[in-house]
Length: 180
Figure (cartoon, rainbow, N blue to C red):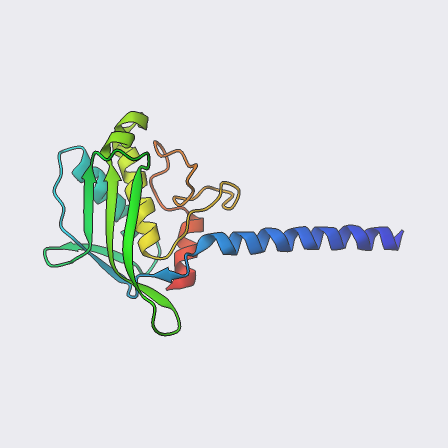
């Protein structure tokens, strides 16, 4: 009887360990913006896109992390919203510094695909906010999360409902706080 209990306990412990390792692995890219202040060039879009994108920034800035996203006129980091022929909603490209103990992002460009967003959104403003907040998460080192990683959802989950999930979740906040 004791042997059976020990076997069940061992299996549960192994299963729990596998889940924990998967969760931690899914959180971080292995590189991030090097400072807690993240600059990006001012952007100016129409009355639907501009407020939705500013909300994406605000949704990160008001969470309990040390990160602050700021727009200014001198940053080389850019945000572009346009109609692209590709099938993605948002895309980030970046340059990295590979020297030192870790690697950090030295410059980034975020692109939002107005064509695919318009074709998929039932709430356009929320959809834009969700996609933009997701791409900002990559800037600060968060990776895409598989659907089973965060029990209460994640802005970094590629399968999230972009029409409703627009704010970084507790899981996202904890992931950022592990990095900064």
